[in-house]
Amino acid sequence: MLDITVIILTLNEEIHIRRCLENVNQFARKVYVVDCYSQDQTVHIAQELGAEVVSHKWPGNQADQFNWALDNLKIETAWILRLDADEYLQPELIQELQDKLPSMPDDISALSLPLARAFCGKILHHGIVNNIRIVRIFRCGRARYEKRLMDEHLSILSGRTIEMTHQFVDDNRIPIGQFIEKHNGYATREAALLLDAEYHLTDVGQLPKDHGEEVEKKRAQKAQYARMPLFWRAFGYFIYRYILKMGFLDGKEGFLWDFLQGWWYRTLVDAKIFEIKKACGDDKDKIRAYLDTVYHIKL
Image (cartoon, rainbow, N blue to C red):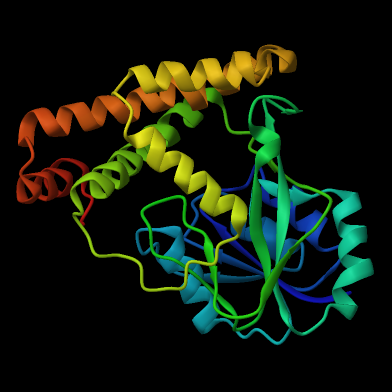
């Protein structure tokens, strides 16, 4: 077994957790499931498969939950892998880790993994899905999550980050109705983040900004996107993904992914920004109060 602890944050993940745990049990010395009092069979399945389950109330965002885990779990391995319940490592990545991790130089603190995206059970190969790398493996004590409403990433506190060759997979199997409900919540937080970027509603950002080149590139692109006109930018984003980046080559699954996660989701974000600006104008205090009272988001 590799000298690595896997930490998985869960809430009602019974449709995913078995696949995830069977995957990481192939190579991880220790597996923790930090559960937010799931009402389904998540905890039972996790315990059945040998994971140590720790219950902790959801603090409001993934960053705080994961940092709580780093501070409170008994981690005795050199490395930590953060994984979502709907994710798993490809066999080639597991082999790559087994070949490289035991002899990794001490100045290397983190590993950036290429992400493969699946939708409706099909791994997508076109659009923008193959351009993403995320730091998910790091040495114990050398990283923490930055505090953001969403799209949070690990901040590497010291040392170098190197890239792995093979992929891990994000393969969420929830029904489309739940996907829409989930992304409605995401859209509210995304709208709050864009308003924060425009009006400087918060003073966040205490950790070093070493999240990896791909993350910084993605955030620079998001900053550019934020300066584009409402609604038109969502349409343009869909055209870029589905036509210019050839998302149409992934068939019906590719269309649904680019339409729902690109055009529909981004239009919903813009609709919420439009709603808030129409109600509050450019008044920062009113925007903060509106987000708090209507959407229960405190900035």
